Length: 442
Image (cartoon, rainbow, N blue to C red; front, side, top):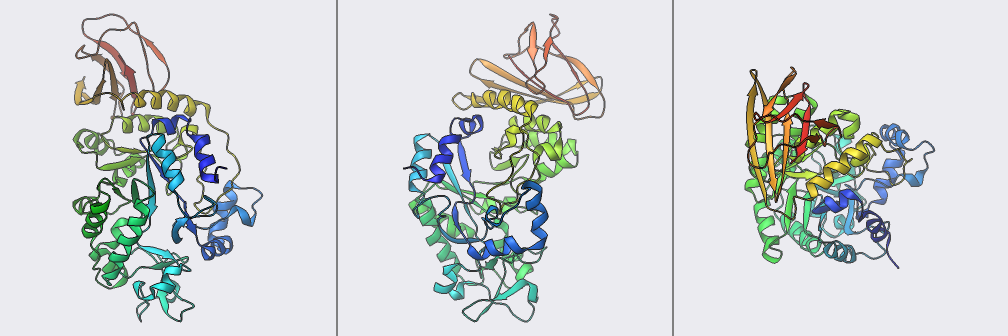
């Protein structure tokens, strides 16, 4: 008999996003904290978010935060046994890499690790605000996990990175995780850096990401380390051994219409060390945040040399952000236009995986207006993207070259519209409104 997560994966394995993806990141598989569940169900600030996605809210709809981890064993809601080995075998059979969460900054306040290793967690001192600490049943007053800009997460306990034994404990945990997957997405990885930890808690961190990563890779040489990272600390984490980090600056530039920054980022990035996204569990749904531009911006991301993070439900154009504590919500009607767009886009991108891929970035001016152009050659097909990053309408012709040949009609993958072409030695004709993208296949 299949376990719940295996059943869910079997139902997803033929979906277009699953077929397109090289790696599958499963969130919320580790054993959930009973204390976190109680806190989530009773915390007033969380209730509006819950009720926004579940009209007839019941206590069992709220399960607790997946980032308040009780232990790094499979949650009973996910698997009947403690291990994710069977799930890992499934993803291997489907030729997918499996990525799981590692939350290095904190554990759940009721984690059994606090009982077995009480000195690995940060004890409060006179400078600790009462709201950022709690008394544990062992009699010690500990600090909640937090970052330097906000109060503590009340369902968590902070690891004490001034204790060098924490790194050793993490290595032990990571080696157990590495037996069940191909890599970890490290939550808020920059919080462990010495200056960040000192700014947050007033103590010097002795934690060494480089040592932790290299030690784990002695036994698991191909194991991936991905960092959720902010505040301009991405390159520091890459230098310490991470394979890639979040590129939140790119997402923020899309939100703030910083088109020049976006085009420069698309043009200059030549290393697949950036994780880019239009939505994730912490951000608003792309359709809600960007509206119709969500299709435009996904098209730009698909021509970016990056790791492209795709969130479940994004292809349906869903608009309701689901709180991470929820396990049951009301269904939302999919958006037909989004479904159609992502079907065209993902089917096209998926063809690249098995073929040699060549990026050819360029800019071209038309009547004094510069537009972003990029061609991707995959086998005998050429994809061409055109983006008008200005506030003015622009038109012109793209000269024929390397795979760009005359066709009587071109279909724009972004809009789904067919454009008839009049043969001209000057090339293919285009017309772009401000911030419009067109994506063609030759």
